[in-house]
Length: 433
Image (cartoon, rainbow, N blue to C red; front, side, top):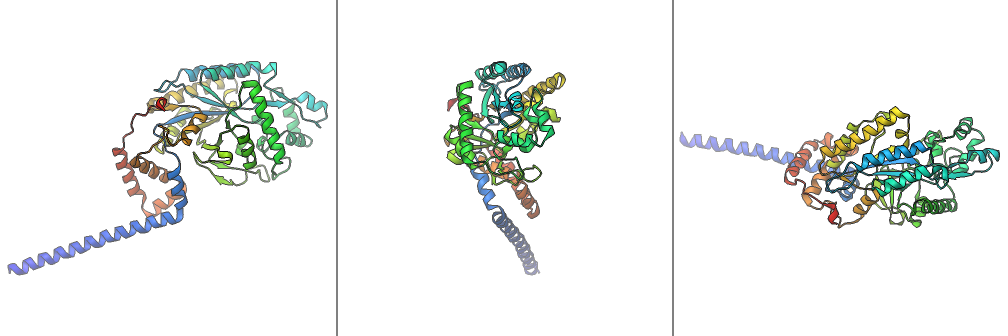
């Protein structure tokens, strides 16, 4: 009797073990097939996410475009922004930084109209009328809160403007406006580095591009003493010819939206992107790409909370937060200007309080860190890099869909959580580099 009970017990045990073994083998098979499918579908993406630099500390940079010739009121606003930024410092003592994408010139409306619209003439920041704006920009640079970036001699290609003037009443009205804010031009005309006189746009002659970049460089040096090493393509439409001209003139970094557009299609919209770009990748002439990855436009209703959320999201991915904003958010009447300035200060202070290790720097400094394998800003510990890599993979729309469909999302999150406990962030001082 006892032998029979014992035999039945062993039989049941063997059956249970075989069931467990079968389940384990089934799970292993599922895992192998799911991972194999992920690699087959997104192998290149996996590689790109691993190679993209990972940073040890949150970084926040406000990138503001379109500053240039304007009334004295612009200078007053720039001085107010300087004061706000100078009062906010990271734990290393560095003030908050706003980059200024500077446009050096505007049309000389009187001269153009006098020629019957046949000849383009410009006015530039070098003229006495714009001295208050130049002085305010210089003052911010001296205070360490402004960093200049190239945003074009004009925010359009002059010959395109002249060609469109002949048939566009609204454009002639714009030319008659004493302020002539480039932000109000049609988007396709704002794309400086393509010929948008007719759509779809065409590439500009390389000789003309090289000549324009040299002219811009010389004028920058005459006004500010040096030409910035960072370029921001107007409306993010540019090509390799432009990059090579920039590189020859001293540009070392190009700000991108994470891709490159090279053409305006029929109707004026952007044609499909021709290249996917990630932080730290290299372009023509060895230039470093950086990616603007969020927006802060108070004129469009963006509030400080948006910045806090962006910093939290990008920091989890070990990416810097580069906020795109424009002059128009800070010049739209006294009440809205005050609101924009208050939101800017609230955004920076709120981000700092939520991330005590937040780091302020210019885009040029960030590019140097990304290009330097020895930089203390870059993460090197393998567990940290794996955790960040998994977080980035979840954040990519294409791979996230596959992770959910295959069921890999849950074990991936669990692994990421476990590595997060093991890799608590160390204190990193960048002034020791």
